[in-house]
Amino acid sequence: MKLRQQARVLKRKALTSFITAAEAFNSPRDDGRVTKVLLHLQHAFEMLLKATLVQAGKPVFDEATGRSVGFERCIGLAMSDDTIKLSETDAGTLRAIDAMRDDEQHWFNEVSEQILYLHVRAGVTLFDDILQRVFGERLNSLFPARVLPVSADPPQDLALLLDDEYTQIKELLRPGRRARHEARARIRTLLAMEAHVEPETRVSSKDVDRVEKGIRNGDPRDKVFPRLSDVAITVDGEGITVTVHFTKKEGAPVRYLADDSAPAAAIRELDLQKKYHWSPAGLGSALELTGPRAVALRRHLGIDDDESCRHDFQFGSTRHRQYSDNALTRMREAVRDLDMDAIWKAHNPAGKSRLPCPVQGCKAS
Image 1 (tube, one colour):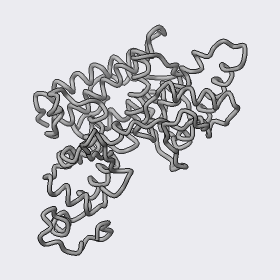
Image 2 (cartoon, helix red, strand yellow):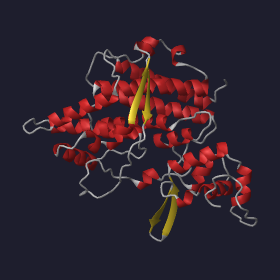
Image 3 (cartoon, rainbow, N blue to C red):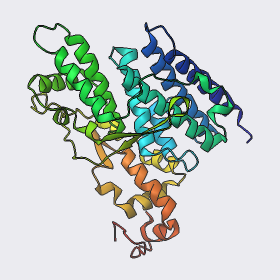
């Protein structure tokens, strides 16, 4: 495969950071180890995603600022590309790594060895998958397998691991222990893991306060961290050849409020501007649709009537309509599976020859 020059540079940077993260994981020195692993693993994935996007001819610079797009936008663009094929569960793994990295870089958290191992090995699996899909290369052809992260005690059951973490946090919060800072650091890690199933996960001190209150009240784990009940893992192989995939189970929905007095421990604050971050033009660009055809597709799918896909922001007298990753995912699937010419004829914005929509499942018929 002939690589674009920028893609080659970015891919080399990704591999350099990936090797640094693997070396740090296997280091005999504990001081600063977790920080180094998370920072370099997240950086490796950002460089790899940008390499794949450049190779696919996708824009990776923000037109308004002139700066390269951030990690979350890279994830969204990679999910919309038919070559990269980043799935929702893949995106969840990347968001969880990024959330833990964010706390480690800007504050501090406490990541247990088994939680760290699971995310690093899941990262190895995903890094190898993306390399193979886009560049036709495998990790074992680029450097020896002996540098990959290995654990003497790899976890096999995520539920047991989470229960153990929860028990340790309760013990640290026991009156007289004087270990509240460590308990809150561990709470931050479990909150970050909710990113596996909730794209809008952002760990805040208010979230930590609510969780701490729930634990002190004696609430069970599935009430304090309901999203974690939706997370599972599959582990295949052993030693150097082990692969780890995080998977998503369908659980009960979680309510989102900004009311600090709400009694539920795990009600999360939701930053609407983080969730609805796609502009109409951005959606069209990500899907390689013209503006009018993107409008027609949104009409066909009923995107603008779905509050999980669309939100109107009011700034003074100006109203801006923005869209979520839900909208991007639904539109991407429609572009892949449906007849866009038929959708255009039925829903074109000019509306001069508006026809009954012939496509099965049309929301705007």
